[in-house]
Image (cartoon, rainbow, N blue to C red):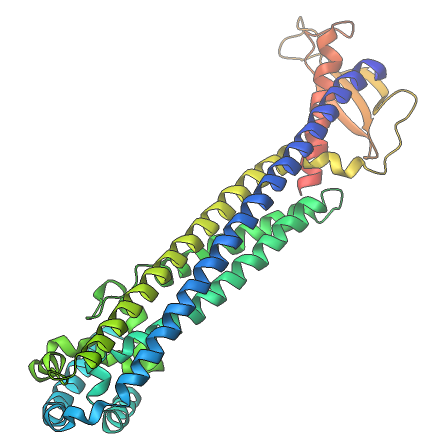
Length: 365
């Protein structure tokens, strides 16, 4: 009996070992894909940073000559500021949870120390790019940490901590997914973007320059944008065009970086789910790494007893109680239906299947 049951267990162990190899193959492929994504992320980040740096240089060059039409813009600026503050505070009070008083004081101070040049060159676009770059860096580091956990889970397949590692990695990814959906959304346009009001609230609290996004709501602010300071200086007009081109390029690469982070995250979630499924199915075999197989195999049958006949149906054959020990587990009592005789090949197959099922459940728990 022990030999017959062990034959079934041998087959299941072999299948589980092949499953573990499948996990390793999947992780190896994922690691290669990960390296490719990293390369693309690094290249995209480099080009994004170059575009931002170029935009900052063009902004500084324009700022050095802003006095060319200061008088015209300053007059418009004085009429723009009250409307801009009112529009921003109305939006913040209606949309954001708290802190209107503090935000109002910060905005007042910001506007008093700002110039119309900030609106004229779309200065908040560079600020937004820099803030978004910091968020992307944090998100990337977060994903890299989780990928490391994933690799540790596969590399440590013969350790008892394997299952908790997979569960923890998947849980952390799922919890993070909701928070990333906002910050990995489409890049904000030059005017106000209502699709992500939570981000706008956070941006205004951190940096009052976020209110400059609402300039299109105010007529005098819009007029500042149409001022042509260098009608007689084509070089300066070209400089502003170069600034706009650099900003558009930086925003395009920022969106591209967001898309890559999304793809990285989706691949991580998919791979984690597949590995977790394989680990639940085959990971139990890792517990046998230091187990020595006995002469009679993995399954030892210790007792076989016929149960008391069923009083409700005395003519029915009584069930059989079998006590076995599988691998290094405690002795386990199992029941085989009475209509299956001891000589039936299915008898020990049922016993072995039940014993292995109990063992797997204990390993998972």
